[in-house]
Length: 393
Ligand code: HEM
Image (cartoon, rainbow, N blue to C red):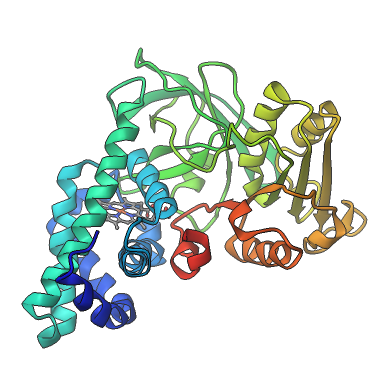
């Protein structure tokens, strides 16, 4: 809880801090990476620095956290903290790094605000930072303690690599040493360290899809402009060994909820849906499940046979597709959920591009689905949670 002393100061300055974040973050990151270039080797993704999403997410989440403390003094925004802590843990972040971010972030804030950064203002925001950092550190410690091993990354050997759709390849790995493997839960992801052109390790997260026991399997769409996916697609060969983290991620099925599920995806966002269907087909095959998928065409749709196979084995499951290619799919063009019958009382899981999920979420909410029943996974830093209080309250 924020102290009585800091509360009015944060209240008075949150507007200006939030407004200045786009100016503060580039200075913060520049000074941090100048002082600690090693953080770009295996920890931060350069791609997300270049496109600016990660700096905005980090600094924006602190403003969002402060706003939550002002509006709901007795609670924390658990959904946001959990998402960030899982991402941090998948990168092996340790508590001793928190002072690094603090030093450079606050240096940048002081430089940007100038005289407005009085000792009271700095002390109040320091309090916000450390409340959030301590909450994250605690969750991260809990996550590490649940693992079957005490390493952040372990070596895995690529044992198969097969194309599964246009520009999409499935990779299956087996352990390359005797580190015990933490079992994954459907919907979770791993971080993989990809060694890029200049020799730096660049971590990327990929959802785990069903694999043989004791293996890790991922499905990757190549982004020709990207730094890591072209290397995975073109350079990594069967027999190569890569460093892979334990599984993390909190967008998973609630074991205590037995009502209907709606699984919504577009493009490569199908991967968590495949993982959920696999779990449901094994553990709860009678479950009422509606699968909604949008894609460019049959050929571009990854895992289409798998999805059809799971659905055909589950008597109360149904698949509805929207494909842009004429004559393919149940419907043409963009997903319109009013063309499918959303079951009463359903929990919804979505994965796909942000614009797609925003559109589907509005359609669902207009159709009467409560916002709190709609969950999503975003590939990359989540900027959505920062701008929509309904997602985090
Ligand atoms: C990711 C917040 C401390 C390294 C993130 C994200 C947020 C965030 C919001 C994006 C999560 C997502 O949606 O995927 C914070 C806050 C911190 C903090 C509020 C302090 C209170 C740190 C520290 C480090 C760090 C100390 C390491 C020195 C990272 C990295 C990512 C990340 C590497 C993923 C970056 C990427 O994929 O580009 N953090 N973070 N964070 N954070 Fe933190």
